[in-house]
Image (cartoon, rainbow, N blue to C red; front, side, top):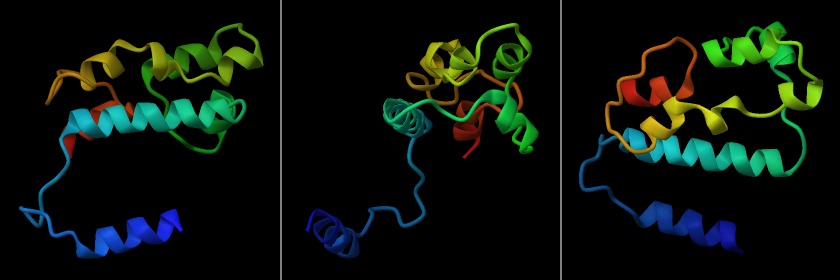
Length: 109
């Protein structure tokens, strides 16, 4: 029922600017909220598994991956305590530049 309501609403909605992109701060806050919700259902995929599957890791994820820490820590989301997240959620075109950071990607789109 709820899904049908939102599908109907989306079909009737016409944006003021057809090709307008969402602000990077909104994308960042949404990404943070979704990863927090995902973590509530259980441990996230470990950083070692993400890396072995070919996903690029940001510099902080890479440090956690190679550090002598338990798997419970390596399955947590380092973004939740990263200064890039805090900056990206509050500043449009935040000055963060390292590779494989989702918050950097949001700044570029």
